[in-house]
Length: 531
Image (cartoon, rainbow, N blue to C red; front, side, top):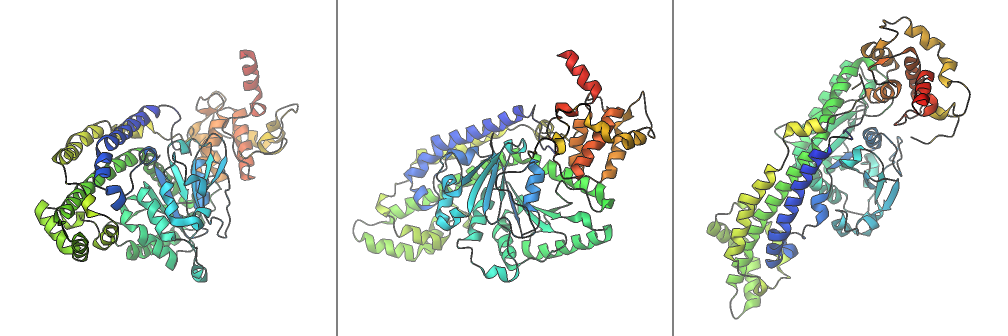
């Protein structure tokens, strides 16, 4: 299941990049100087860095152990990645960033957290214990050119919850959730119990409800009736925790590349897969708009902060500064009310009083600047003019969908292996290896409706679906087997397709390009003549 086209996406990607560059320029030239002048970075929030604007859309996966988070990642990126482990026990005990790289590389968390080119430097505040449970993995996947994934530790259940992780687990979850563009909560259809730790984790991120999507995974082992009951039970359980007016979108299926154990729900699973793919394809646009909204919120916060420090500086007397400072901090809520009335500020836009009290204790109010009219006007111009211009650079939603169209392989919506095994079997040998087992394939082919010795895509599809492989894998097999790319299969191509199906059912991964030794004899001869 390739999520994004390799070609033609560049035009839209460039448009999103232009918007990002515009936001970055606005921040550097106008917003950051105002932040430095008003001590905003010391009191409210550290200054933004280039990676905060340039980072790809971030997808965070959260779930109890053995819900299929790692298998889902592998399903999405269509390959193994460094350090990947899949098993029924809690195999993921780290926060792991899975990103694009030309070669497979693993990077320790301590290194990631000090890399100025990565948006993870602020994770240092969670301490060394966390950084030892944090790592990055890079691999060459086409999907990762468009997004970055975060695999989180499998959330514990029962008595295991009493084991301390040694760092602020929910704090780290909240940190990633604030910066993520999608938060995917995975549930195993066979064990819907929500542990106390999982409940705490969901509550920590539920204010990001617009980003949350739910996956009811491993659903292929259930009948229609069982699945309906499980779906209802999950909805009921989540409604008590999320407590939102709208129910989060739930995708039902088995998101891995193994054959479906119960084939009756195939059409449902295919439709759910298509919907999820569409949602993920929308992330570049969503991420760009989120960055724009975050910058607007930051400017609003900076404006309120400017009024606060301006007021505090104005209230300081020539004599008795220490006593006045203590009085202001002690009665900060009353002073906030004065500031709100004076400037018409909503209570929701004011910073948290208790947090502000602690931060103000170490500040010298006499160093606070008096707010300049020019600074106020410049920030207003950013909101009224500059952000509007940046928004106009966004490509339309329809264009974004078109340029990031899914490639599912013909009619269907890597591991290295030693020579002589799997895909590599038959290299250097005389004859086409498929011929050794094609008698049964040819017999099936001869029973099918043909046109000039070829079967149509729909006819081939019906036959190959009998393998119960998911469409993502059948799509790969179709692309490899339709050697001449005419949308039909000859008798040789049909035999090749069935040979590849057998390899896949035996656990072999499909290569991105058909190896020369598997080319049907006619196609191989034609290629030789062309050379």
